[in-house]
Amino acid sequence: MSLTTCTIHVTPRQERVVYVSGDLAKALKLAKAQNVTLKLGSKSVSLRLKLLKKSGNHLYMTPSVYTQLRLPRDGTTMITSANGKELRLGPMIGILTNIVRGSSAPFGSRTEFIRQFMRVGADRAFYFGFSPNDVNWSQGTVSATIPLKEGGWARKTVPLPDVVYNRLPSRKAEKLASMNAFKQRFVRQGIPLFNWSFFDKWDVYNLLEGTDVFNHVPESHINPNAMQIKEMLEKHKFIYLKPTAGSLGIGIYRLTYNPKRGYYARFRRNGRNVLLRFSKFEGLMALLNRHNGSLHGYVSQQGIRLIELDSCPIDFRFHMTKNSENQWVVAAIGAKKAGRGSVTTHVRTGGQLMTPEQVLQQVFGARADAVLSSTKEAAIKLAEDIERNYRHTLGELGFDIGIDKSERIWMFEANSKPGRSIFKHPALKEEGRASLQYMYDYCLYLSRFRSRRVT
Image (tube, rainbow, N blue to C red):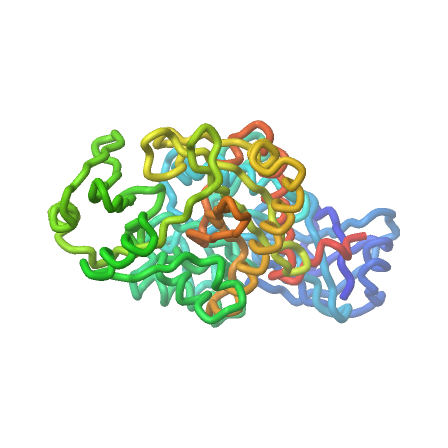
């Protein structure tokens, strides 16, 4: 396959011809007199090829061809040819999310992140955002939201994309049968869609059970009953109760058992950290049942004595992405120090964001580099095993990972649509940019526009 970049121009001529400069024809191994098929996403046009005595990589098309292909813009992009007879422009990278009509922030709170992503390789690809309602399957088009060079956004009808990056924000919407059927239509048309849906906490447990890395997963039980909770507290002395479909630490309880003093429940209510003590187990269960009706939809998870700074537990957010070679890489690591009295290490509940080097050097001294290296290796193996047992295509993962005082590595949660709050740390800005580059490279891999072959 031949792959390079080219500059697209619109010529006022009316012939059904595509004009290609000599240098571009040479790079794509095109013969002089032949018919070619010019493709963009799901659209294609059959044309005669004419070579121009012009240096540089240039392609000229007529206004009618430009309209037929529904090009989002002219200018530079990638072009590939597998056999000299089919020329593919692109890739067309579609970001599936919610759209806020008539807004300067069309993707709501995700607008800045999506804008940053669309800047990566903007001169080598066509980006657009869209919602499920924007797709016209019968015409093979999308009513897309595209970025403008001068800033701002525009609506334009474009072909179905070469690859779909799923950033739909609603767990509830993604569980609908209609949404599943919608995403399946892309797959049936040979259009890769990655990050299929949110994980529930129990999904991850099942995906890893029986794998080589299952020893990194704390003991857990779905829909625990009172007997299981009591047994886990007696065995581990503290446990967590987490909603299976929860995020941002909302609805989590930390339960502790002290044989001399009884049972403790730590949770967050009305924006405050709460700690309650119960002399008897029945009192603890009455609280949990009063708050939740039952513990259906919860997972009980073994508590781990994590490394600490200033008597505050530390865990780590590993932001994992695929790269251009379809391999998992650690794009970034943020260390999170729990706020005093908090159930979790989330910044919104008083946690502090730090770099892993800051933390590990203080805790492990000369062993810091070795501990970090082994944790990275474990994270990559966890990602590989989750992907191996998952039915759909994954492009990124967020792991909440802990290290105990004996250097054992634990994975508490895996997120298939990880947030990006760790990149707010000044020391992680570069990693934030690198993570977007990896995502772009993975889009090239899935859409068969391989960046490493660009000349």
